[in-house]
Length: 220
Length: 376
Image (tube, rainbow over all chains, first blue to last red; front, top):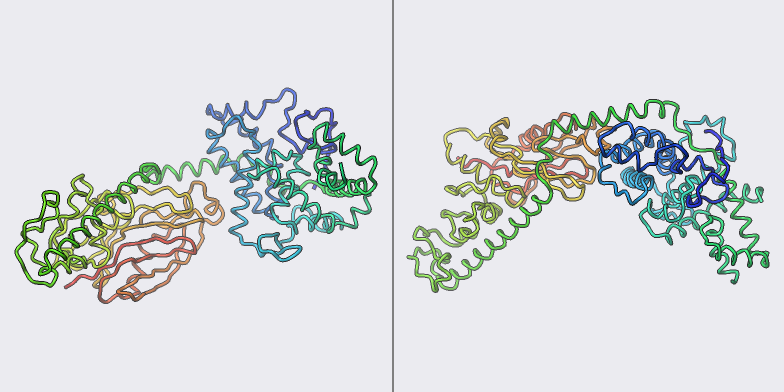
């Protein structure tokens, strides 16, 4: 894993929906000077060009991987699911409605694939409070990307705490905290209301505050 | 703003989701309330702890060559799709339209037959009791279509059981449009063997109801070649139907496929694949006569190109159930071969078999033809 880098907040557009301090490099859809917008690229792909789709993949590849990994907690599965996400996006690019944002459409494909995958995998459920079968998964994070020896206790505990969240809450945290999405964007990706997004975020934070209480009190 | 309201807004405040006015209101309360300030501090601390987590880093070989792998896979799927073009020939709209039309025809046929039975029962009790009587004139011009045929000498009860020795006049209106398949299920469902002389219904019917008409084809074929040993005829007449998994209907090409299909003999049993219907959530598909994982939109194929799936046949025979099991490899196992092998193993000795099904794995059910024993 590499440490996140931040760019000056002044370069972040006002409508990006980023909270102060959110690393802007985690928001690849922010339009940079001199680069084609997603829409430009999509229109070229729709016109039959292949190369612009490479650019789109390059933009969203890692971000997509992070979201998918957050949900499935396995690098092998994340790899396959990200590829499948792009394949589906490419095959249905003509159906993409240009009045929407490409990345939310893409994320939504990925999220749908992940939930279908999780359903199939039928993970043994566990709940922090009650063992509700709808909630959470027991699977611990796959840490093959980073040798365990290199992970700090703190990092491992954060991963473990996130892994204990139900998938929907984990996804909400991922999209908000790590992808810097606004509530409206998260609701588009998760195909739910903004109120539900707020509720999932709130519950997730409550649980995380309990699970990471040592670090939270230390950070105050 | 009170504390309760403030705390409800704190996360939105933290997430920068409040407008200017909302922010000002919260900040005004925070300035005066230590408890809410404490709460905000906790939220901010949690946020900073979470943000300190390094970004998930994909494996080193993931990014390198990602695009190449992507295009390779896209091309592979396109190649595979071009190999199986027939899967996409039947648009969903037309399939639904045909299914609706067939259902309507079926209802009409059922109504007419029911009416005729009722009419015969009350107005010609002698026929019901098995006596041979001369047909009487039907009352009213509107019932002319239901008038018993001069050839109608068999008991009506036998007709009701499906052992028709005449073509009932009731389905005629349905078949005048050239698609007589709607009448077939009435005769084919309960008892199948005594369908001698029944002309084959619509071979091109593309829905399950129409597919049920297929036994008649095999039966008429069977009747036409009484001296020959029973053979397996025609696989995959039915289409793969969509139920849950969003699968497209497979195209059916009855005439050609019948001739191309391998013929196998199973003792005294004649089998015909009538209807391959998939109930799948796993996006595995069954082409007529073939178990395969489709190339398009299917991550299983990528992941498990040689997935071995259990296949089992459950055949209900006069209320009893015969069962045989085997395993097939998704990549290359022909469903028909598996099914035939299992059917052979099940050793059906006699009786009329209907409602047979082949189950593949957990989520796929493929209905195949009734296995019929030749009556000789």
